[in-house]
Image (tube, rainbow, N blue to C red; front, side):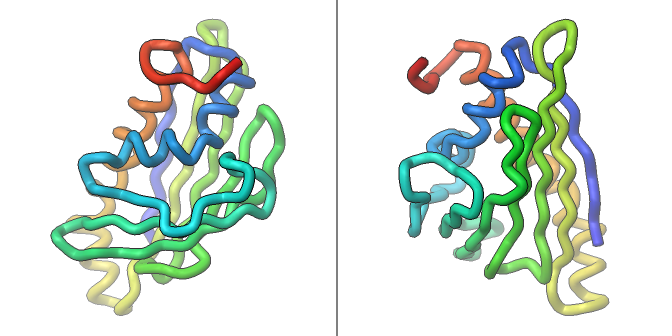
Length: 156
């Protein structure tokens, strides 16, 4: 299993960063270059406890569908999501938002495992670990821009 943690300080309140992180549109905007779309959008237009979403994207030239659920929603401290079905043997993502003198310390912990046993472990170690880290960093770049008011933002 691959695990990595990314931390970043965002110049916005934890409430603001939390709200932007729960916007499905943020995810779509951060993954535009991969042609990611929502096959199944969350009811109400935002993620909340128990909502599910199905994503479709193309990575490494291969089309993927991934269905995930959002849970353990604890405003504004964080939430988790995990794959229900899709390309991974398992995928889990914890989002944590803590007060920081310069705004919010945002921490993402990602754990995933590819299918196919030993071959999957080699792919994870040689390719997918760095690729997934880069995807989450791109998402976090976009989240920071929007939370700090330097790009498209949520109302309010």
